[in-house]
Image (cartoon, rainbow, N blue to C red):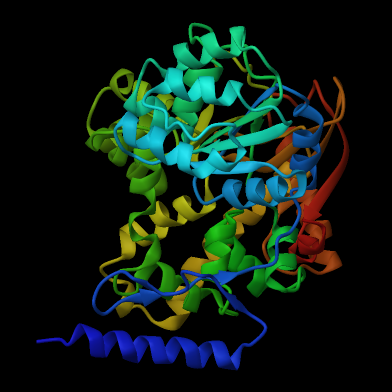
Length: 465
């Protein structure tokens, strides 16, 4: 029988020994987290980087009495960003919990009572709103995980709307934050919601960039090893912390995905829970897309169901920003004929395209094979980022013709682009340019758009991401 205390001590000793070897790294107050009697992890607190535009938006939007809504996927750094900003403006922070309304209200009251003019503890939301009306000094209050409150009391949006419309003072500015795209959209952006139009600003916190990743983790922009690790994690700061010690991507993959009880094992389930996405069909669609079925007809074929039946789930996943739709160049936004779907988040894309199909066999692969899977995956992330750097642009495919991106300059002129995740010689680039031009002349749009130039992008472009 295992002695859990002995194992805890062994891991704790190893952890503090590791900390001693890296005195420049800070451990969080909850640096040791016991996941089981034999598995542990620690958090490295990385430097806070960027979010300058978000701070500017908050400072501009939050004047006296205003409501600002902040949302973005879990692990993206909303809480740390808001706490950092609140410390600068002297605001107050509270995080909602999953519980019955009376417990939630009590939690919020205890977090903010030092700003209140009374010691009377509220029993319901009307009492809480009255206490907020008693605040006489200008203050910013941030309530994080707001969807937990709405999930426990569906009448809260109506109550909050009535308070906002009729409150007696405007000293209090309110920030409501949540991770659920679905819940935050339905609460603040759906025209039938009581809180529709009440927010002065709705801010979607986006994933951070490759440059941010390199700055936060002190890596070189030009190093493909840096990008390989970023490709596995995407722009999610929490994942960056877990990969801080790794300089080689396959070691990072082994630790976060393929080790015993890996951190990333249940991440998709947590996102699905946030978005209230349930049922085997959702997981099946994600598996199909991750394994290479990108057209709606292909997805339906993999699942063995009619395409009309799978379309509803595809749109549900798209609305939750779990998957994204790519149109071919020249296709109309409404009712396009040529559409591809892919998983939006790089970390989840890796989960479904590499981790899920290979989890049982990964340990049997050679290091070279493992590296190839990582490299091939990183190349797809590199292509997507390069395409975003040349907006407005679209992928193009037609029968056996594929072009990485077509950048539209105006109604008559375009630039063709090809992305290669390797280093190319001048001669190789010239050859690829010639092939691009030949491909375009064989497309249905050849007579409508004039080629103003070609861009062949290789690994040297990493410095510009």
